[in-house]
Image 1 (cartoon, rainbow, N blue to C red):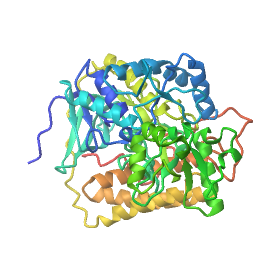
Image 2 (image 1 turned 90 degrees about the vertical axis):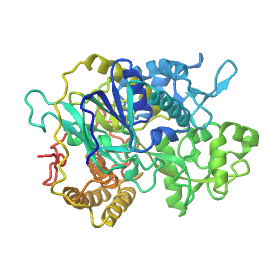
Image 3 (image 1 turned 90 degrees about the horizontal axis):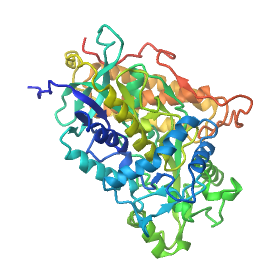
Image 4 (image 1 turned 180 degrees about the horizontal axis):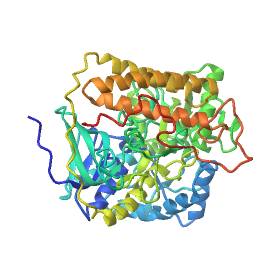
Length: 545
């Protein structure tokens, strides 16, 4: 017998349990009942692995104007100034909120230690040693677990949003719930809610090499797109310049702060090369550093370049980067004695679901916050440590808006998920093969450097692959891997289409066919609208009727 599903709707369902989702859940729980969906364990996700810190103006020698200017400069003309000014101005209050909840940021004297990262003109990154994400995530998760108004469903993955329009209900279209797979039982539940928020993170697992955990499969972006929401600037995929190069390291990220504290990027002969690409050297924005490393690797036929901070001394390195030091040591590299090998890897999705500064999407009743959302903060390239900041600030503004909207009418009872016409998959290898193929051609054709021909090849491959995935989805019971593959294919298509529409190089999007930045026109966002590229297999999901 199928496990029972609560009859009473949640006031708010939060899909995702990273910093954005937990910030929203904890703040909204002061006003209503919250259900938090986590794909894996509560704390497992990109937020947990964030190393560097959170950017905020906390030093008297710094200024909000300087933080705004650095963000705009990194964003290569595409940041929305209103979003930048709002989020930067709210940063000190966001940090105070985290401190009040017990996040153990690294102290210095009577205050906190601030580090500097690429693209910043001041030390303004507050951190918890070199494991800020772990400190923030575990602290907030502990609070959420014990909150009487927060219900946590771990190992539950959302399949699709449920809308009034798809149910054929009269009146304005709005989000009324979500279909969710319980990974332990294999059952699909229909969870209804007055309000729903997507905080599902980015889509870097669309690429062969990524610094992100396996959960970063673009679920929220794909679901929102299928539900009718616009997305913007999906071509701007940030590749972190320095991930540890080792076959067993799974692209372990080496924090930007290592370069911020004096680390040098070296060729095999020991010479530095970043000054050849940018006067800021190793402290240039990530897009510049990643392209420089990519060029050095291709020019020299290298598997990796070297990152060396050993000149700072053992005590400094172990004191500032204890986790990175131990992890590198585990793989046989002692960063106190010499350089470590590094390569770029897909790291952050700068585009996403279009929202306002309260997290509201095109669909009534649906919010999106964090990496899955597009607020205009990051422009064509995210400034280091602005990502966690956006999570906390938008979590607060979305919670405030949702508290006002929380009195929405009770949503309808949702039809159960229909599995009457599907069977268990007989060849799981199909999903695994398609997953591998997608990630490899995205890396080869839609990576750090792009061309028109590469994008055309990628679009041809994704069109064929999407058809296979659609057929598979229509005939077999859903599994976690199938849901994620379906979402990755959708997001990969959005990335490719967005890249094809940008006929210039700007920020994270570099095209050999259009190597210059278009300075003759006002910079424009790449906005995609559902239905703009309709195909025969574009369907909203396996609706139960």
